[in-house]
Length: 234
Image 1 (spheres, rainbow, N blue to C red):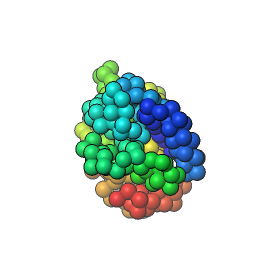
Image 2: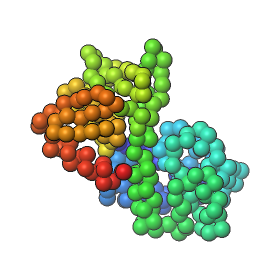
Image 3: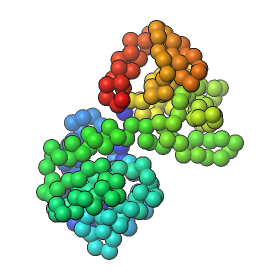
Image 4: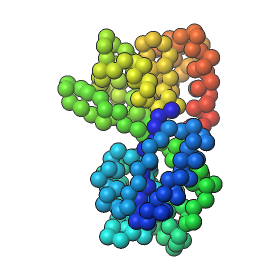
């Protein structure tokens, strides 16, 4: 399971401490790896927001409020999920103007935070970025756009649309970077993106006109993961 990087932004340090403690309890319960960073202003958050997957964002802050901060988050890191937090219910509609995925009312309760985190983890499937290379240029590619990965000599090839990107990492290293809710290693040479599978029968998998042979010893595990993906994410 990939690590989720969370930011908490509130001008009151006591609030960030309380929220961090509850978030940690929730994530530990579900076995999710995480990093949590706290910020006391929107401006401080924006300096690091490109590194974050989700932000718990207070509405009422001096200098730059939550909505102004949220608009900048959408520009700087469109894939970052925003969870708005406030004690005032009249700000509910404003939260949707910055594409907030959840709205929390103060004081915080563990059940509400767990719901918010579950929602974010579900939405995050395939939204993490990997840095890949093509002709010595570096690109940031969303994982959901990677059709499959192939081991090739001392590096791996990533098939994205009609392009092939590379990275000097082993296939095992690629497994570590990728969200394995979405990807599955079918043999010693290939990792496939389950969402791109066009057809599957016995040991054969088809993706975009390409045929792959599933290792026999991985067949039962693949079937379980494939069904899990179909039931949870489609």
